[in-house]
Length: 128
Ligand SMILES: Nc1ncnc2c1ncn2[C@@H]1O[C@H](COP(=O)(O)OP(=O)(O)OP(=O)(O)O)[C@@H](O)[C@H]1O
Image (cartoon, rainbow, N blue to C red):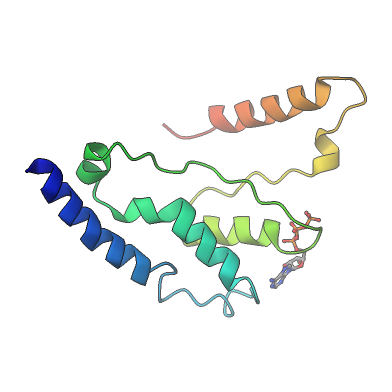
């Protein structure tokens, strides 16, 4: 019975989440972003949709929130812009933007070590 109730709740929330993939009051053009509606829509659907559910339902269903994302694509196509604007929309801390070549090292394993230390630094500076 509890499971049926959870599923009924989930169905309602999914309908809600589906209707509000991109929050209606965010105007990307006003934010100086053009042509990335599909990308933002995918990000909200895949990374933020679970956040619209109440915490008790999330726990009951064993859902895990997405805690990070990797943006990839050709240079100059708006990856940094997306990261910064999502940070602003969510009133989050400024994202830590690093350039790929900054991470690369001539010795085997050192590039991976650079990435690890960059992530650890960020994790340590996260407010608790
Ligand atoms: N869709 C867009 N709308 C408006 N400006 C954009 C868009 N895409 C990129 N720009 C602008 O182009 C410039 C480069 O974009 P950005 O730095 O976000 O690209 P990137 O994908 O992170 O590049 P790289 O891979 O080289 O780091 C920035 O000034 C950014 O504001």
